[in-house]
Image 1 (spheres, rainbow, N blue to C red):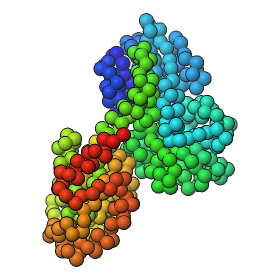
Image 2: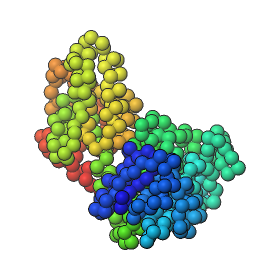
Image 3: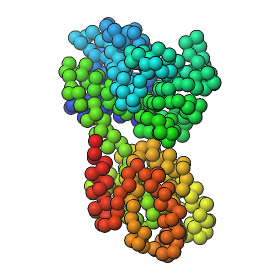
Image 4: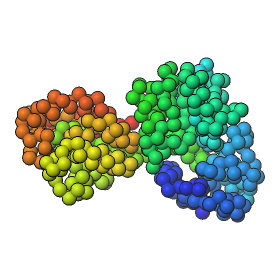
Length: 413
């Protein structure tokens, strides 16, 4: 291989896609069992590699030269083969620094908690100290001389201003997990999570719900990849490259989620967007009907609304795990916070705001069969839609016009 990423499990890595945006230099993903690491590194049949879990520390003994930064941190995530000699670097430092700056974290004079004790936590510690942070605690499930337990973190360090998660808690496929309860930290000013799949972990969502600036790990992943590519190719990219590539990856991975009243045009607009973007359109109502083999009005009639909502929640949870699709939701999907949390993890929520007088009742919508029912649903839900949405899209004209407004917003920097 020329260039690539090594690790034990790489099934959901974004690295190859990021490097493809930087250049056509043949970047591959290579899973290596623990017993094969030594042979792979000593053979050195590569020009440059990135290194991820669990090998960021394990590769160090096989390297000929260690960059001062990597040596100080004790972890390597980039190795360059220079005429048969292996040079190790830590580009995660640059990535973490970029992430903390993006989220507005200013460690100087503030208490910082770093969740986890692996290689990324050591990098985070080095970055925080380089940014002037002096009161920093690493948090571990098995506390030691240089760490505190999660219980101690909540009991003794509730005045922490910054939380950095470097654990895999909340990462796909266990997206419902959250490493810590941020309600125990009332003066938080920033949260950074190294988890990038999903784009917005449960931790990030919990922070944002409280108005705390928070960001997932995609920006860090892109930044470290840019720096690694510079080492690979012996070049320097323009300063705006990190943000440019990040925006390209964000658009590629982020779902476009349509919410709104029955008959507001979600399915039609969704199909238009899917055609324009070359994406799949997943209509949750259609998925439910296909899975059940009956129409939604039949489900309501035979099993009741509660049973339908359970099926809807399960469907939403499943389709939300995907990235890069258009999701058209049912009108009542916003009634459950769990649905919104699932949709937000990889999605940007657009409320199709269609005037009440243009909402047409149909027999296919059990709770909006006539004008009176639609008006009742409109009054009940309008505030929920506006509060849940990331963006409100005026939809008083054609479906094409609404789709164009979404496209324009989605591609805005």
